[in-house]
Image (cartoon, rainbow, N blue to C red):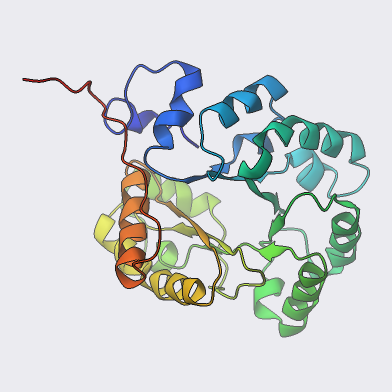
Length: 275
């Protein structure tokens, strides 16, 4: 998620060779969702390039391939998982968490499968699980069951907050498209580890996006004061201004917690000149 077409020539220099695109994105934000790995395990040389373009403290939250999570549903997927873990090894400390996004049909009755899968994972990585089945949010017993399994593995529960997005009907083509695709689940903001991860979806309107994230500003400020190190990803239906909004969210939090490290300065889109 660092080559969005609408950013080219506006937020990121254009044209840019492939080995430079992530470096320019990393001038805006210090973390990224590794969503492309869901569709295919990258070549190891490609991951080496990702590491070369980012500082050691840059955060990749890298999604496990769908063959593991959706097609095999965490069973009989050793070969695919091994290939994935080998491919991302060059990230080193940049691999902030491996993101296990599960399909909406993955229900509380499937939690034992998740528990077995987590037990077999190497302890060289941290893990974060995103679930979408309504029962995990609506049924207290199912919530406790999942939290217990995640706690045993020191894994985080990743909330995907779409409540602001679904608060009123869509008003643009991008919003209408997202309306049919994004999950509708209740708000959840409880951290299980010292490194919580949040995914937030706003609207195409900046004002409504900012209004909707105020809960997260308060939550993240609280986490930071508790000594946690959260990672927040800001999305909108068209993502046209997502890096700008992410920096705005960071600035709101930093105004409340001045000790938070500043984000980097973006690389100029146009070369700097004397005149």
